[in-house]
View 1 (cartoon, helix red, strand yellow):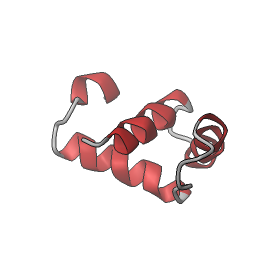
View 2: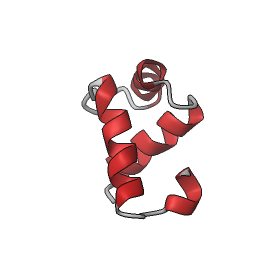
View 3: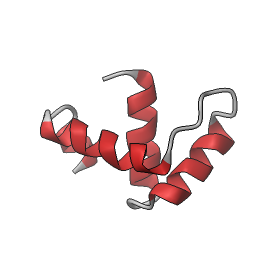
Length: 59
């Protein structure tokens, strides 16, 4: 898992699965990083859970 993916999973979880809100917070906290599409947060979360990477922390 990359640092960017970990950040997206963390923010997505912080917003209880609200991808639009996750994008807003991601922009606030990481203003110099590329801005992902809101759907990317959900896609990354599912990708991580499918691969069972850190699943105990995000499920």
